[in-house]
Amino acid sequence: MSAAVMFRAPLPLYQEGLAYWEKLVRECERHAQSINSVITKQGLEAGHLLEWKSERNNLSMLRKLYPSTEIEARLAFERWGPVIRVAVNGYQHEDLRYYPEEQEVPLARDLDGRTVAVLGEGKSHSPAEFASYLAQHFRRCFPDVALPCE
Picture 1: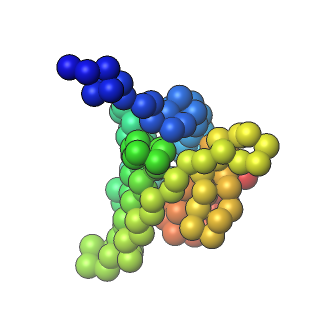
Picture 2 (picture 1 turned 45 degrees about the vertical axis):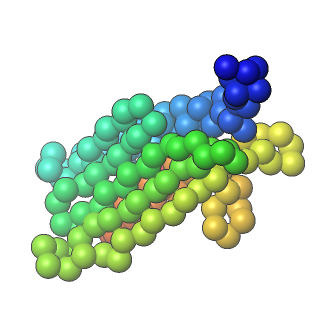
């Protein structure tokens, strides 16, 4: 096999994408724990709490009771760089589903060299800001509770 065939260029922003993802996972978990703490202090039953799960390059946050919300995020690497694929689903009640939301959020370098998520409106988000954006989807589950999302 020739050297040209054996050589494989590294994926752009691979290490930066992994580092961003690790920070995002920690921030999402922190938000889920903060929301659960507020819900517990409000005196709501354990069934109202958010469920949190993180696996390699995947995370999910879920509230099962109606109104329900499920957020799933997955880190993927394309030839041009890392992208986070997000799906948000939920139900107002058993027969009334919220319109599902799906996004592909590319990761890029900001002008100051930070790795950021770039949402559709062109705004760049740090891992903490992006986690807060995701956690805000749970507002519809708790309309009378102020969620602790910066």
